[in-house]
Each structure stands twice: as C-alpha cells, then as structure tokens.
Amino acid sequence: MNKVLVLHGPNLNLLGTRQPEVYGHQTLEDINNDLYQAAAVGGWEISCRQSNHEGELIDLIQAARLDGTAAIIINPAAYTHTSVAILDALNAFDGKVIEVHLSNVHQRESFRHHSYVSLRADGVIAGLGSQGYRAALKAVMAE
Image 1 (cartoon, helix red, strand yellow):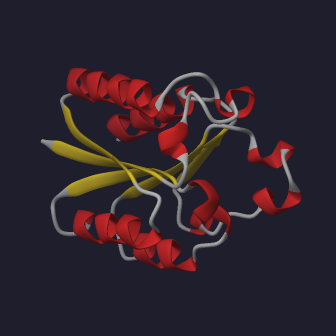
Image 2: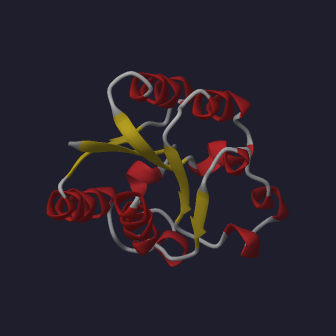
C-alpha cells in the first residue's frame, strides 16, 4: 500500500480557534479526518502528525525515508521561513514533497514570502484554506 505522511507544524494544533479569519474555522482534527477518509477511498495509508518542535518534525521526516513513505505533505507553519534543518531533512527524502499553507502567504507580511521548504517541494499550495491539504493529497495519489 502507498503511504503518505502529513506533517503540521507549530501552532496548527490551535486551528479553529487561532485567528479563524486567517486560518479558517476547521480544527486540525477536522482536516485530518477529511484526509484519512480521502486516503482510504484512494487506497492509501496516511499518517497525520503535528508538532510544535522542529526536531520532532525532522525525526518524522527522517523516519519516512526508511518506512516506505511515498510522499510527504507538509505545512511547516512558521518553520517555513526559518528552518534550514527541515529543508535538509526533506532533501534527504526521495519521495514527493508538497508544501501546503492555509493562507496566501504572498498577501501577508513580507517575511512570510520566503520559504526554505519550497526549495525542495515538488509543489506548493497556498491560500486554499483546508482544501489545500485535499488538493495536495489528490496530487500525490494521482502519481
């Protein structure tokens, strides 16, 4: 069975209550449940993980190199703009990488316009809200 890992970065555990005008009203659990259902219909195994800790995200990426994971969908959140370490971990992963952002980062503060993760990502989806995750999963499953 094909495997996909969905990684949610810092503060995404607060979805639904943190700045809903920017990030929407769906909770992280809502988003994950939608992804679990869509993956099951497509015959894919999916694991969704969230961490506020950079090192834990890196450990999960490194583990994906060895466990048969075909793709990583990642919303690195604030680490998008700061983490060379996450970029390095993703560079060591041979599968597909899709970067997702709930908001359109290019309409926001200028520091959000740069993404280290984009240097490795095979695709970037921004500004579609929670539907960006579904679009990323659809793209991964179409391969």
